[in-house]
Length: 296
Image 1 (cartoon, helix red, strand yellow):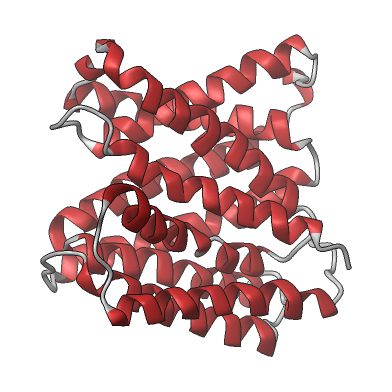
Image 2 (tube, one colour; image 1 turned 30 degrees about the vertical axis):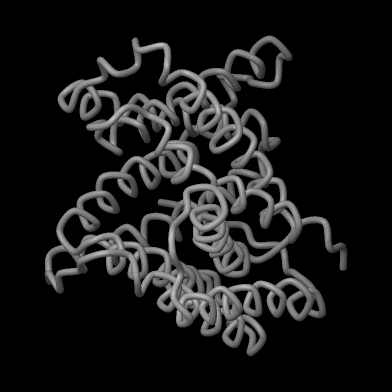
């Protein structure tokens, strides 16, 4: 089986991992949720203009149902994740959200699509989740807040759902128009929240370079890569590979921002990398069945 789809998903996760570091170059006091809304709206909007100019979108025959569910999943993921982080701290909120996503993706694939997860996926996912936990053990204060943990789990479900619905969308449309439509719609759904929290920071010229980087590379290009790779591999494997995001964020934090990682965190980095290697090379030995979703 071709290694390229795995590489594309890894590249996407690596680009997602740059977003946290890039946000440090924004002016202080900006709500992360407004950044997410701008990323989705601008990143999707730019692609939408390109797709329309290239005549890649047929609005009359567009699979609106799949697009709406994918956009809604991402629009729900953002407030669920950021609220959980505010209630429980960065460590627990991130670990529960990112760590639970592969588990939920595997369960959806097993229960809904009748595709039982492989032992290779299980080993890789356990390694990656444990690595994620160790990476975040030194990320500031944490609070075991039941509501925050519940929201983090819901965020994990939202991302897993997005991945599965996107795979169905990719059976019908190419990656570029699919990402363009999904994230333009996601941006519209998040726009009211963004205006409530305030978007005045967008007018400051100093914020445009990091914002554009997050929109173009962290959103547009990243999700095109992710959804292109998703066409050829299982959704559960793609979500496990997305754990390269915290790996990238941790390494960038050390080498660019000057953050400190404990010995336990470096062990976590190694375990994350090990899980990614296992799913990339071990997962290729199993042929990928074509899954046609039925989203009601």
